[in-house]
Amino acid sequence: MRAYRDEIVGRVCEVALHCVERELPDIFHALASRSDDGAAIGFGRAAQLGEAAGAKEERQAREQAGRFGRELRAASAQGERAARAIDRAARELADAFAPAALRELVARFGERMDLHARLQLDQQLRSAIGVPLSAIEKPTRDRIEEWAARNVDLIATIPDRYFDRLRRDVLDAFASGTSRGELSERIEDDYGASESDADRIARDQLLKLASDVTHDRMESLGVLRATWRIVQDESVCADCEANEGVEYSLDEGIDGVLPGHCHPIDRCWPEPDLEPLIGGGSEGAGESEDDA
Image (tube, rainbow, N blue to C red):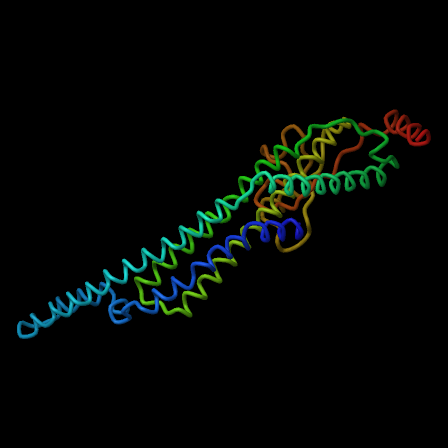
């Protein structure tokens, strides 16, 4: 999961950041040249000047409000130009985005998780009935291609959210009198959020794939039921905790939900009911293993 997350960050998040960094000098230059008086005073203060002025100062107040209004409009125009720089960075990333190459990478990680899930089920079988999965395994549905395509679509949403956050923060910086240092901190936070998006996608999607291929393999073996198991730590949600130890049908799950699909980054797993494999099934499997 960490390796998958790092690949997403390197191929998407870091590339997006490089595109943005090329635009930052112009954005910061515009921010520095903005009229700090006009930007810092805000629309509310300009309105208050007009409302609070007495008759004697009314003309002066109107002049001040007009000046502040012009400065605010100028700051807003500068902010729009800076926001367009973010749009240019987004278009540059879109041109560099290579879905086909990304899909190949994603598929490789899917295959690695598929193998990991297979080894986990193999250990369960060996422990419970002394039979390796290879001795009784049957063909199952290939989920990798479909899973990879869905993941590429999800990964493509990471820069969309990243640029949306950046554009909002840049516009806000010009409208509210934010300093360069404050905007720099926001930009760093926006990038950190994009890394978090990559981490959530990597963890959640690999866990869901592991759940799907494990249930597919159990069904192919003739297993009909399993017990819901949770990771025993403080991160387990209330719904999953309530499902701990509950037996369910592989066709139906619990309220239509299987372990791994209860919520994002669901780490629950199925403990198969191997009763259908005990007896004749395991005897035949044992002979196959000896022959191998």
